[in-house]
Image (cartoon, rainbow, N blue to C red):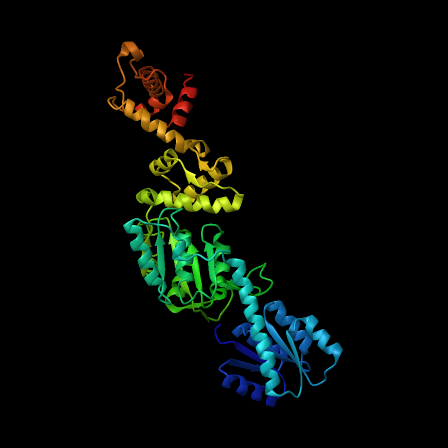
Length: 470
C-alpha cells in the first residue's frame, strides 16, 4: 500500500501541530485545517484516506463534516475526536460514518492502535475490491499449454519480462489466442502478484463511460456524479491494469492514457490534482495497430509507449501440434464441471480437430470440447459429438480427393444459342444459375462434391440452389 495521506480538522492549534508532527515522523503525508469548511476544501483537493475530525468546530460541526466527507467519498476513513464524550455522541458519530472514535485528551499510543485498525480496514476494502475483479483461478505459465518451439520461446520471453516491475507490455494476436491468460500469468508471476489485477475490455463500454471507469471522477464532474469515484488505475495501485482491445479507444482517451504511461499520474474527471500511481500496464488487441497508426486512427506516440515489450501470440492453426494437448486439458476440466468420465478420444476425432482451421482459436476449441463433453454418453469422445462444421470438413476433404482431376472453375458456355443472349447482353443471375446446374449435373447432384467443385461452402450452395429453385 502506498503511504497514506492524513487530514486533521481541529480548531485547537496544539492538537493539529502535535498530531501532524507525530504522523509525519511515521512517514505519512499530513494536512490540517482549523474549520470544517476549510477541511472539506482540503479533502476535495488532496483526497486523503484518513481524516481526524473534531466534534466542536467553528462553523459547521464535526458530525456535519463527517456527513459531508462521506457524501464525497464513501470509502473515507474518519476518526471522530471529542473532549465531551458520551455514548450518544459516539453512536451519532458512527451512524454518520466515522470508522473510529477517541476522547480528548489522548495518548499517541491510543492513536497508534486506532491507526492500525484504520489501516486494516483500508486493506480489507482493497482486498474485497480485488477479489471482486479478479478471476477465481490463479493463472500462471504452468497453466498455459504449448509444445511447439515457437510457443515455448514466447512463454520463456514472457516469464523473463514478468520479473520486471514496470515494463509496459503489448499483447498481439487474433481473438481467442489466449492474450488474457498471458496477461494474468505475467501478473501472477511478477513481484506485483499480491496486488490487484484489474482488467477492462475497452470495446465493451461507451467512450465516456470507459474514461470514467479508468480515471474515476470527482463529485459533480457530471450530472450523475453524486460522489467521488476512484478509477481503475487508482484501484490497481501497486498491481497491474490489463487493457483488452486497446485499439478501440478514442483519441481523447489515448492522450490521457499516454500521460499515465509517461508520468505515472492520473487525474479524475472534473479534478485538478494529479494522483501518482504505481502500476504496470498490459495492453492487448487483435487489430493491426501499426496500420491504425498509418491511418491516423491510433496515436503513434502511444503505440510506441505501449510496445516497450511486444508479444505476438500465434493462431491455433499455426501450432496444430498443441491441439491434442489442449483438447485433453479441456476434457479433464469439463469432466469435473459436468460430472463426466471421458478418458480418451478416438483417432478420427483427433484427426478432425487437427485438420480444422479454428477461426476462433483456443476459445473456439474450448467451446467445442465443452459441447462435446455435454453430449457424449460414452467414455471415449466420438465424432458424433462434434459440431457439424468440423465433421463436414472431413467429408469435403474426401470429396475433394475424388474430384481432384476436375477443374475448380467450370467455364460457362456463353453461346447465344444455349443462353439465348439478347443483343444487349446476358444477366449474371442467369450465368451463375447455369454454372451451378452444370456443376450439379457433373457430380450427380452430390452437394458436397459440387461445393468443392465451385469453391464454396455447402451452406452457400444450398442457399443458391434455393434461390434458383434447383
